[in-house]
Structures are given as C-alpha cells and as structure tokens.
Length: 157
Image 1 (tube, rainbow, N blue to C red):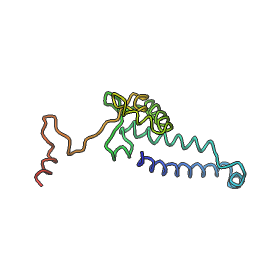
Image 2 (cartoon, rainbow, N blue to C red):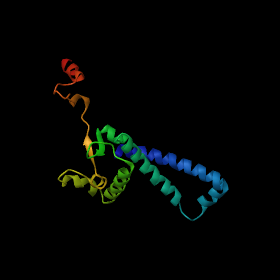
Image 3 (tube, one colour):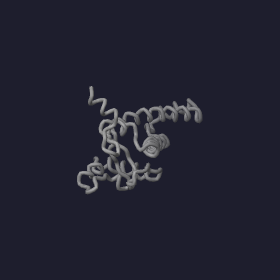
C-alpha cells in the first residue's frame, strides 16, 4: 500500500494540475483568483470527484490488465479470480469500495484474513477474488520437479 500510495500522490498532483488548468481556461484566471481569495474555503467537490475517479482507475487498470499494481509487483502478489483468471471491471469496483471500507475501519477488513478460514480479506470476499503469492524464478520448479536451468547455474557458482 505504501508504494502504491506514493504513486497515487503523483497521480493526484497531475490530476489536480490538469483540473486547475482546465478550470482556469473555462472560468478564467480572474474568476479563479476571486474564488481563491474568498472565504468559501478550499473545498471543490468536482476536484474531489476527479481525484476519486483517478484513484479508482489507477487500481482498476492494473488489477484488470495484469492483476498487480506496481506495489503488488514489488511484493510478488497478484489479485485474481478464485479460478485463476484476471478480474473484471465490476469486480475491481467491488474490491475498491470494500478496500475503502476496510481502511475506514482502521484496517480491520485486511486483518480479517487472520481469522478467516480461507485467509480472505473483506475486499477478497466482496469481489470474489483472492490474493496469491507469485514465487520468484529461483523457487519455481518445472512440472517434472526439476529445477529451472537458471537455478542450476546459480548452484554451480
């Protein structure tokens, strides 16, 4: 989550920059200056919606394409259907909202796997998916049980 959080901050910066540039082109710089100096406060519901959508799209894009966000790739984990296939957009939406609920409950939805018989989190249950560990190349074995050639070369060194 930490690695993906760093990437999300960058995405939020870019989204905010594009939003403010478009807003400035539409309403004009003078109107933006008046809004900035008003006592209304910094809240902008449209910007919040844009940030929310960009956050969802970041996760959903990676989950549906390769099953991993960049942070998940580092930890060699992948989200998939229980039958081993990539998840679809509706599953990613369910997973995203369940992840928000899990985080809102101070991580209880993620800790749930400690008590769950199948070791599933709330997002896993809600979207009918699971997280699987991807073994490193050194730990992979071929179907006949022999080690990969790369592993044999490592042993010779």
